[in-house]
Length: 173
Image (cartoon, rainbow, N blue to C red; front, side, top):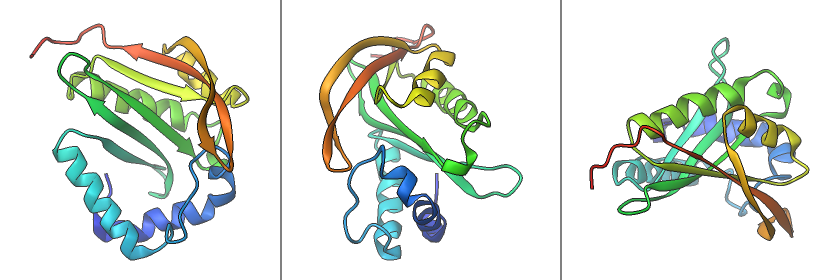
């Protein structure tokens, strides 16, 4: 997780990858690249982690320590559900190197072993073949198809719905 004092790193990642990320992500507000906005957002991210609402991680390239992507565990639901949704993206120039598979593998392991989530759900646009492939490699199962699921880049996009369950979930309810 990034600390608020590292906001410049997040802004740099999003600025460099703006065109690429807009294709699969939500619409960005006019202040999206503002440093003060990002300092506040990173504080919110830390608080949401402390209160078990979300876990928002950045992916760092080992050789350069540069941010090259992110994995977000959102909408954590406890009690009888014990699940969350994940969203993720990787810099355009780092695709096809196994970075996302490695990041997802480690972060999902953390969500299962440490956070004790039972189910992680990931959804992807049918034309995003790389996303579908990485989820298959990690053992996600396709569960359905949602028409007009998310409003992305000015239009409603269909999504394939997938999930992965934790076979070692511990009942702590």
